[in-house]
Length: 224
Length: 251
Image 1 (cartoon, rainbow over the protein chains, first blue to last red):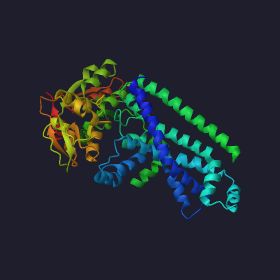
Image 2 (image 1 turned 30 degrees about the vertical axis):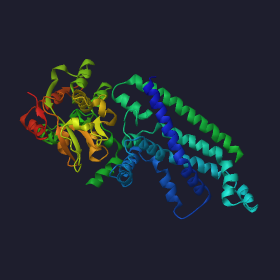
Image 3 (image 1 turned 180 degrees about the vertical axis):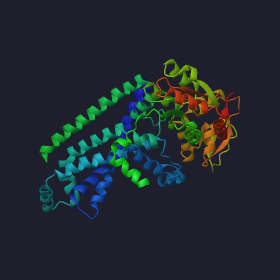
Image 4 (image 1 turned 90 degrees about the vertical axis):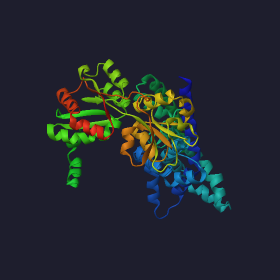
C-alpha cells in the first residue's frame, strides 16, 4: 500500500465516522418516535426514511446535487450568504454518506427501542421520573447496544458509499476521493493492481463492521 | 403508442434483453463526439438500413471496456494514446486506423460569470476557486488540458483547484451548474452549451495536438458494416456535420 492509498483509507474512515456522528442524534430521536409514538401520517415518515435504502444511490445523489449545488436552494443560500460550498468538497462526502446510511441507523435503533419492555418505563414514571429522565435512565441504557449496532452498520454503509458520492463530491485526489470512488477510477484507467489493494482493504473493513454489528445485536437481544 | 410500447416491455421480457444482432453497429466514441455522431446517425441508418448504437464516454473508459471484451465494432478515441494501447493489445484492425478529426481547447465560464479570463494564464487568479477538467490521469480532454497548463507554467499553481470529472462533458456540466468557476473543455463542447461562454481559446499551434483516431475493433461481429460506416464518416455529408460542430478536419 502506498502512502496515498493509506490517505484515502484514512479519509474515507473519518468521513464515515463524521457522517455517523452527525446522523446519530437525529436517527435515535426519530427511531424513538417511530418505536413509541403513533400519529397520523406515520407511515409516510417511515417510507420516506427508508427511501435512500431502496432508491438508486445515483438518484439520491442527483437530488442532493440539486439541493446542495450552488444553484440549489440549500447550496445556493450557503454560497450567497456565507461563501460556503458543499458540492465537490469533503462536506459533500459526509452529506452523501449521512443520507445513505440514515435508514440503517434508524432501523437498528428502532428495533432496539421496540425491544425495551414498556413496563420498565411505566414503573419509572409511576415512581415520579420525568419523561426525559425515563428515557435517559431506562430506555436509552437498555437500547444502547442495539443503537451501537445500528450505528456500526450505518458506518459500514457510509464507508462503501459510491453512487451519491461520485455525483455530489466528485473524485478530487486528496480532497474528496473515497475508497469506492478510487477503486472505480483505478479500474476505469486500467490500474487494476491499485484497485485490488483497495479492494482488500474494503473487504477487511466491511467484514469487521458487520461482525461487530452482528455481535452487538446478538448481545442486545437477551437483555431486552 | 408510447404506452403500449412501455407495456410491451413489461409483458414480453425477451423484447427488452438486448441481443447482439448482426445489423447493429456498436460505436464506442469519445464523449465529445456525442452531438455530431448523433446527428450523423439518422441519415446513415436510412441510407444503409443498418442500425447504429452509440456508447459515449471517456475514451479511457471505452478503451478499457473494449479491452475487457465489450462488443464494439468501431472505436473513436479522443487521443492517440488510448488507440495505441488497444492496437498494442491486438484489439483493432490495424489497417482501418486513421485520424480524421482535431479539436481545440477552450476555457469556459458560466454564461453570467463576471470573471475575465483573457488567457489560460488568468486561471491563477484567486477568484477561480475551482477548475473543472476531465480526469487528468487518463481521460484525453484532461490529459490535453494538463499538458497545456504545464506548458504555460500554471499547473503547479492551479492543480489544487482542479475538480477532475469522469469525462469532458461532465466538466462542462460542472461549469454549467455553477459548481466550478471555470473549466477547460473542447471548443466543440462549449459550442453546444448555452449555459457557458468561452472565455478564451487556446491558440492553434500552442495547445497540444488533439487527434481523434478511428478504428474497427478486431472482435467486431460485423467488421464490414463497421468499415462502411467509417468510410461514410469521411464523406462530405458527414464531414460537414463535424465541421458544423467545430471539429477540425485533418488532412
